[in-house]
Length: 180
Image (cartoon, rainbow, N blue to C red; front, side, top):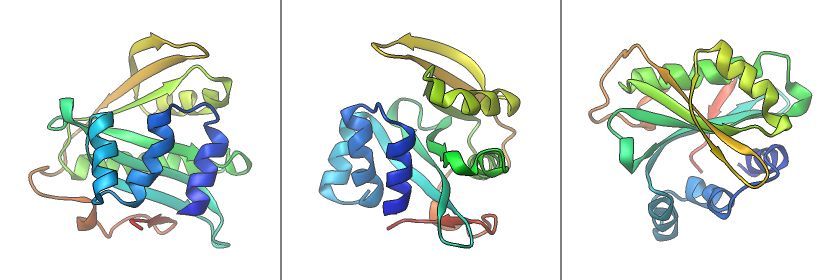
């Protein structure tokens, strides 16, 4: 998990305080502090956090799913989608997107949402989101970059009633679930 956090912090250099503290909540989602941080951010719960690892145990990418309270019944949000700059162009990002979309569909969600930005560092991700059907649904101007909101409507495969991330053991071979 330390490697995953280091990767995310190196790729996303300008994070809000809430975003910076989110890894504490990811590491300890059921702790009092983790629950308080999620409450303050408007997050209902963490559905999954996955780390894409090479055979050498080097973290190549991360992704996750979480739910906001405001739209928890209809959508999950893509969390910390990121690929090591040295691993880009090798299909890691596509594998992570495919995994996250399949998981969201299996949980019965009708939409998967994300926010990203106009930061030039996120240009490759923008192209990947577009290619995978994440359409832009809004923008918010910020001090240094504009936040872009995207959404993909999903073909629902299952039910979201009581299933959690622990119900899934069918992740692709290179994706390791990390709930520590």
